[in-house]
Length: 401
Image (cartoon, rainbow, N blue to C red; front, side):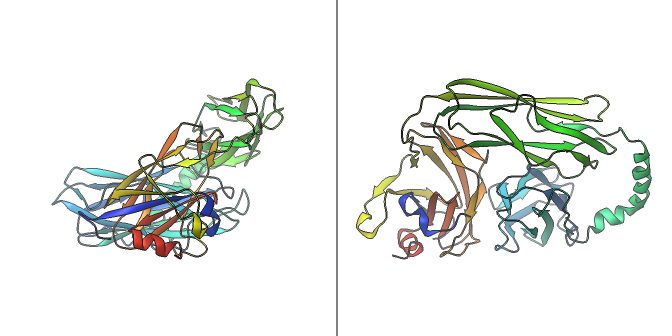
């Protein structure tokens, strides 16, 4: 596969998915290119395994001088797959003086542990690093992210200890939630539990004491991830996992309220409204992954079922993923590589907006790929559905055929 005018191919596998497993400190300084990167370290804090952090935005800008060309964006350690680049521009990208671009990063650990990695941004003159960290061992876990020299050197912001002493000014915390209303839509009665995330953070100038996180009713919905405690000003958000189990729930519309109580002087109580509509049991309610425009390939004799083939263009590709079945399709994470196929750094998911997905029958979502070199890649969707991207011969190689 070649970039430019070359093409790549996509295979979507459902029955064959069992082949694969599911899948800040300071950088080296601003180079002479004039590229400014902010922030250059991100600490995602605690995130429960298999859940997603709130997205963090990195801004790339050029204040003056000549145009800077971004030639590559990649993680330094591809084996650490807990960090996801969910939004990135088409490469190569030229940023002229006064211009900017944004990257969007999330943290989604699959197991308990402490995780660090580096996002490398290669320009036509140098490489800038963004240190990333996060943990999933306990709600109060911490991780040493880079050497945080900027924050430390801003340690004239050691006088920020004054700001910390201004934290004698308790009550300066400002509660913030990523959503004030969640509608899970229509879910058949016998479906698996559904889940959504509310990111809770302190955007104030002082500490925030959260005294209570819970549901007003609490009979059908449930919430986990954080029961209360102190949130530091400007610290990483905590994720509240709001779930509903349709099994046995009566048909009709169900509502509840997620209530957060804190010492925020302006908003001591913040409510998030929750709604779900339970419809009649639809029997098997089987979701079927679908790639519109794809052509079926008959490899049933080799043990592979429902394989779809789609030609897409490099260096970037947007692929639509639909649900042509009669059950709800839930995808919480996308993992690159798998048990038998190593990750290919030249083919990666550059944007999977909206994760976690809950795709109702007839609905679709999109995945964007960045393709910078040759080879093939296996992407696993929650261990249920897998895609292989590459030329036909490379794809067959990925499948071990």
